[in-house]
Length: 161
Ligand code: RP5
Image (cartoon, rainbow, N blue to C red):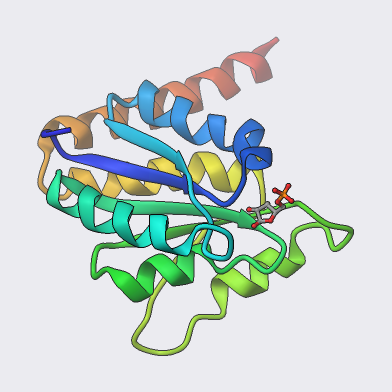
């Protein structure tokens, strides 16, 4: 990939159903993305190789989604100074609280921007990445404004009926 893109990483193939909402949101905004299954625990060497390769190829931010003892976002943050957006997922009887705390409680000097648990977090990760991209891209800023207007109109239209 040569144009700027956001890397969407998830810890397991079992995370795909939720994270497809992240990819779809990127697509709806015209934000290029590359989605990969890579685990902090199960494929650490492949994760490190991907971070290096993606950074060289135009990645401007990482989205990292995982459930249970969710160390993926923290592991990416430890290996890159690009922004890392974490998405905690439901994958155990703890309902995502395990992943939320694992993702959000980063030590000082090693930030992860943690979204909500599950589908809302998956979508918001894409919007947040688009907002980062929009800092230097006026077209994306306009698309984000239009998305907000469409969202508001859709709600008001339903309210009127
Ligand atoms: C995490 O463990 C993954 O992100 C997934 O949410 C969870 C369970 O993984 P599987 O056992 O379904 O592969 O690392």
